[in-house]
Length: 393
Ligand code: MRU
Image (cartoon, rainbow, N blue to C red; front, side, top):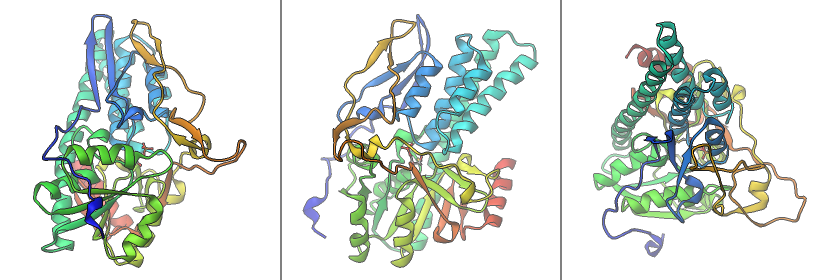
């Protein structure tokens, strides 16, 4: 494979701005998001002053990726509690914003639970709001710690599966710092390999239709000085056939009790390719992504998104802000899809099939790496054992 296509920056770049932060402004508390729809063109912040603004940001993928959705959901409940909105109503709105990533509901329910517990103890509104914020911050910290531990376990697994190697890793979608309180999931493992001098190449699937790979993973890889090459999703087959992939590392939005993995659409074809070519297919996700209440892959709700995301090329939105209650800009609600609406690529009126995720059956997954360790082989029993272990700690 021609190395002139390798993209690197000269040396390490700053890791980039944080993906989300809580801020206390004179006008009141706000949740500030790095607007991922605008990357890599610009690093713009989106200030959410209320829950509907945050729900819109979630639906239009200004904030996205399973672990970060959980953190954002928890801060969203804190925003509602701090501003005196109906917390139960806010929690329901947030939880329903996107259906597949189980972390969103987990974060929202955890924060809402902290509110109810505080109220149950007789706390007034201000104290209850402080309890929710503390819970959201705790979840944020836990996710950062989970990232670190996943990176360690994942790197050890790579070394075990590919001894003495300098790895060529293929990844799909975006799983780095942009989706996490820390350095991410699958990307964090590749980054750990890079820091140890053991990453020869990160192959980055562009990830149609919204280009999370091209726009976000390539951005993160460049910022970290990693050797990476971008490919169209359907070039992966010939890359495997050429023997250029040592392992696939992806994240997950929900892992069912039987070990089925829902992740960005295009993950399942990679798993099939990996099996055919005898390449390990490794899923990296925190235990908050494991959902023992979903029995199997068929029971996972896969988000269907607007066909417009397929019939049009994604383009960063023009600034589309209105003034919120505090006078700060908030996102304008969009009719459909991501707001990444660009030039049409299909005749007007074309119908498109646009599932946001697909489901990989457990038998195609070599291993699931979590902060609590590695499940391999991936079976219902292994997942049950992981759940028992993680709920004890
Ligand atoms: O639609 P998105 O961009 O939210 O989808 C994100 C993914 O599919 C990620 O791979 C997944 O959330 C894992 S992130 C650690």
